[in-house]
Image (cartoon, rainbow, N blue to C red; front, side):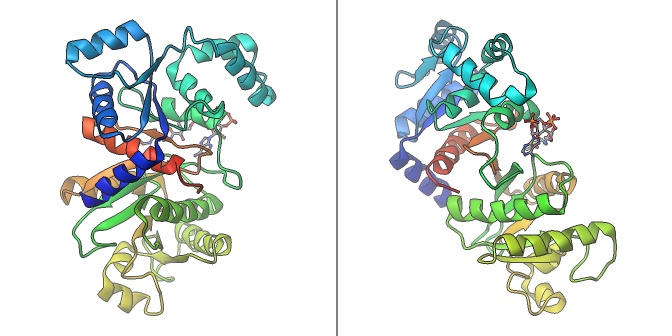
Length: 332
Ligand code: ACO
């Protein structure tokens, strides 16, 4: 895929430090070898150095260019713990609790980023989404002016849809039931992700089971209000809703149902009304239409921290490290 190659090349120029908390995990080690060989990013593996090196030898994988940091013995632990106590003082976090949390690589990674010792993180090959996200929410937090973290997928489909077959779907990974303001934020951040990572001119559709008032229901009202708020938040962007999926992506249906819309029929960013629709929707397209789905790319966080599916492949990890590095190199 040409786009992924471009993302990797851009990552290589940025030379960012990406921390991988699951340092001794097999796919992570195999991906590390490729990332170093292709110069996509500098890799920091977390875990016990002897265990990681033995595993790499057993797998016949070269990880010489990676830094290995042991969260349990690292000399920065006290400084990091002091910073954590300060960041969570409203929650009453003690020094002892902070030091205990640092034993966990899923906490150590985000704190490294907060301290400026890494630029981004990728985890989730062996950990659940919530366990990857919670430390990030607590210590890296959201971007200034943003209150919601959400997850976008880059979807590669038939080239008659989106921009030569590339679409962005969100939120497919994080926020179970966004309210109208949160949904508006998700729409605006997804447009920024589309621009920053894919370089596309975003045409954002807020999806519903109704187009321009064809159905009345509180769920439709949420999408209508979210569309209005998103337009107020980002008047420079092409955003429209509420649109049904066919009105959003099929030109003839868009013309029929929303003739004056600049988005209908040619949307390239699809914003789902809630996580049920988003998560099920991207998997339907992936499994039934055979689309390649890359993500979730987490958006709205103050620094890039991305989550993997536990079924991920080595190349998924390589691709997501490249995307994480691109996010670290852009200021959206
Ligand atoms: N954006 C920003 N901050 C958030 C968000 C969010 N979306 N959600 C929670 N937070 C913050 C809270 O404000 C809170 O901050 P505080 O401690 O400073 O007060 C902190 O994170 C913890 O909040 P909780 O509500 O206690 O978070 P919880 O751990 O219960 O849930 C989580 C967060 C794990 C993301 C939850 O929303 C969740 O499980 N979402 C679904 C994830 C999932 O399973 N996705 C599908 C699989 S992914 C896939 O298929 C690709």
